[in-house]
Amino acid sequence: MKNSGKQAPKTNDKVNKENLEQELYEAFHNTKEFGGYDINVQAQDGGKVNLQGIVDVKKDIDRAVEFANDFPGVTGVENNLTVSTDGAIDDDSVYTEVNQELGADPAINDEKIHFTVEKGVVSLFGETDSQAARNAAASAASKARGVRTVNNQIRIVHPGDRIDDIPLW
Image (cartoon, rainbow, N blue to C red; front, side, top):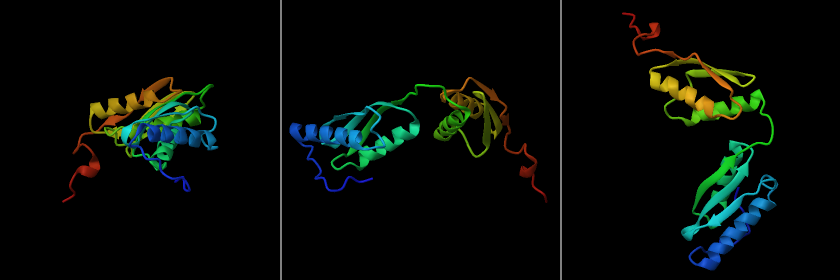
């Protein structure tokens, strides 16, 4: 989302750095999507900004960073936003967060890992080729809010151990 109609503040002096900071702060607070959050902005030299505050879900962090990156005059964003909720988290929310955590870890082939969530208990299924990847999946799942226990049933399958890896000639 580009904020059209606004002249990009020049960020090469203190006054304009402060203008960028104030304008982006006001843009966050005047946008319905972020109006309920107290997102603070600290501008740095060269158009870089630091975002601080608390949002409800990771998706809101991603959107806030995108919003700031698209703001006229911003050349980079340092993200120091955190996620926190005020109430209980249901299994659907846990599922979403576990899915995000698994997808964010490069050590995990999330196409071969599947999971269920029931009353905060995450059960991991599928296969991977190493103990390290199996452990990484359990660790990633345990980072999600609302997870009480991780039941890791991921199998380790080495290349050549699978029937479909055997040549048929």
